[in-house]
Image 1: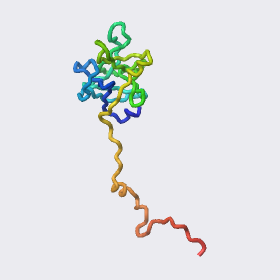
Image 2: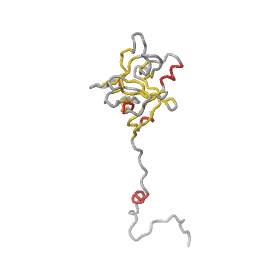
Image 3: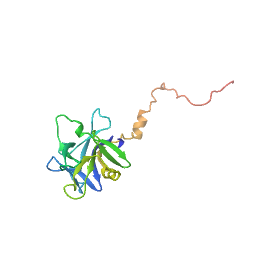
Image 4: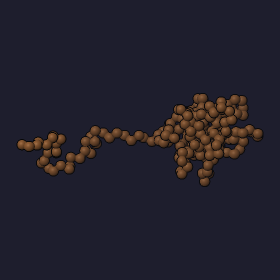
Length: 185
């Protein structure tokens, strides 16, 4: 996704609540305070995996789609911060753009989902498959690029002039002109 091509760090939010790495260095949650370092995620491209990304927390741990249920019997699975010697597909997220927002899909087809409502769902983050049409709006995340690779700067006029090559013309001779040749005199 072109939005992430130059992104170094990002913040992900849903309805003015930010995805944050909890201080326990294991869980993730939603918080209104997007100014903390816990709301900033480093972007890494999964090598050889096409369009998939990894998000690394301020603790150096990856946003991971676990197989642990949020509650027994619920379809939502916990999203955690983990570190592993061998990165696998549980840390990979495919961004799917939807206007100015994006959905993040796991290789197994689930989506990163912010949850609201009553506890234990309030401010927790799961991965799940949206079952109803209205649920699809609930898995949209706004992306704020915090740090990005610099754009290639335009060269200064003096650099452009320096790079023009007038050295190809013999010394003492004027460069060729674009005048039409004179015929028949």
